[in-house]
Amino acid sequence: MRRSLMPNKRLTARTLQVAGTLLIVACASSSGASGGPDPEGRVTEISLSLGAPPGGVTPRVVSLFLKNDLPVTSNQGGVIEAKLPPEPVFNILTVDENVVVARGYVVATDRGTEVTLMAEEAMTRKGGGSAMSTRRIKSAGERGRALRVWQALEAIASGLRADSTLAAR
Image (cartoon, rainbow, N blue to C red; front, side, top):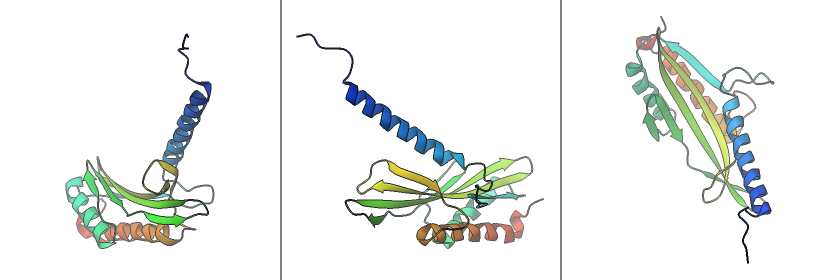
């Protein structure tokens, strides 16, 4: 009996479907990176220009994350990340999890430092696995944890603006 070198067509079609879905999720996640308003006028990130060098700004951003109940889970290479514990979401047939991640990007510029604050919300199957959907948290129309995280990002931005040692030049 001779075996074909071609994989099963059903398996190939399923693999392409999964790969296409992952590509769509990745593109959707990065599509709001510009920071401008979405079609409804809601902002998906907060950007600040500060006069201080990144070495002085990063510790302040970390402390403001902690002060605003965003536990820092990673702080590497100018990226401060707070990944909140998953919350269960009960559906008719499944139990999914809602995961919220807030990030602060600290980047050196010729005038000082640029800080960008943003957050994403992902739905995953309980017990881990890949995200079923990911979306940017926006400035208006949010509820629950997403609203609380956006308010925390606004408080962090206000704290950075109010700190005279970090003032923009």
